[in-house]
Image (cartoon, rainbow, N blue to C red; front, side, top):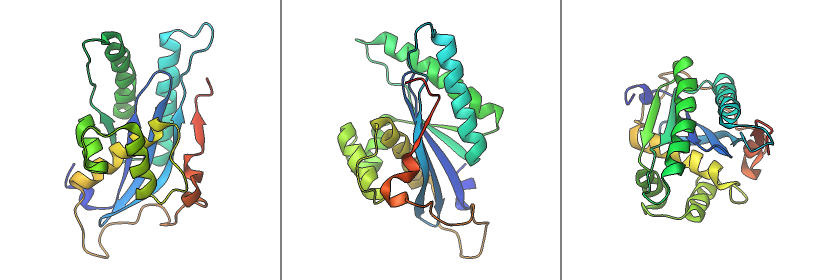
Length: 201
């Protein structure tokens, strides 16, 4: 994977959850990381919607994002297990499972990253708060306000952490440019953070 990122790459970061899953897509080349789009998938809680229905909504949403943006890698925060909240870890495991399956079915490698490594890469502090991560992402991409909800910032943080760890400069003129090289209209004003997929608020 390290070798793959020596050419222009598109990375998808995911912050998994059964209520709200954040995603962030970035392009990277020669040390430059550019925001393409970010948003949320909402499996949500609708009357009568059990766990299987919510997992299918999440699976479908992840597949949609992968098909649309064609990432070279998908980055996920490792599961953190807290003795006081074992059920949370179990549910998170379900969410991660369908995300990994969606990626595997489309031949996208899945990269696990420790939460502390992600926070440290963005803020210099492995114990940073969600607000600090949001501010770091706001500054990184020159956004006019905090990315909301925090799941979006966490997803982008995972993608940025991975690019920081593995990207290597390549000589000018080698490799191929991703897309048309243009930043989407309104990127500085959070336009790429516009999408809410799943529709189960």
